Image (cartoon, rainbow, N blue to C red; front, top):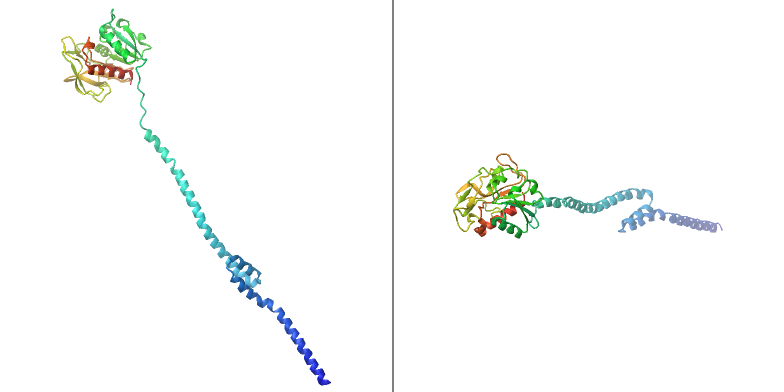
Length: 332
């Protein structure tokens, strides 16, 4: 009986110890299995899942790795974002540069057009009014009739004025004045034309002398002469003519080439052959001064004709006449 009780006690103790051992083993896995789950989580390639696994660990295990992993990821993210920012800035800088450079092209444009300086449009004779001053006779001198017809053919409206009626007031309202060779010089000597600011063509050399625009009053015709020397062939008045040009079809004892001896501010187009001091075609621009100080009020020009030359002038002579009339009208 006693032996039986001892065996029973031994069995009971064995069972009790076994139960205790099982209970201890059931509590331990919580600590020991945690590292195992950490290894499994670490093998996952996603950074987010690694961070989640670390966070579920005990504070001691998660503190260092998680803290060091986060800055690393931030640095890498910053580096990854940095090129994108640079790439964004590069085009912005380029476009900004282009925008700055763009105005440079238009700024240079005016210099190109500074082309050209704008020239005054040429004045057309169409509808312009001419005052033709000449000898008072009935009928009118043949020369004045021929001149009036040619002026009308160019488009001018022509009015005749007797030389004896010439005054500054009588010239008002006209675009051009033509002082014919038939004019009596004594009516020019009064100085009536000094204050007239209308472009004027003189075919009477005395008219230029009385204004101080020529230094010789009388004896200003070289007779038995039918040509002139073009000394400024590039001028519009020359009209492409150059050298010695025949302006009459013949020579005569009573006619020839008339001239003036102009001052230093005159523009000379043609002279008497062999004598450059004697100007057969010349003009003064508006604002120019005579050697005596007289200031020209409008463009004034001189043409070389003698009396009756309308019948013996060559085509070149008429061309020069047309050109000097139109040039004077421009009133430069």
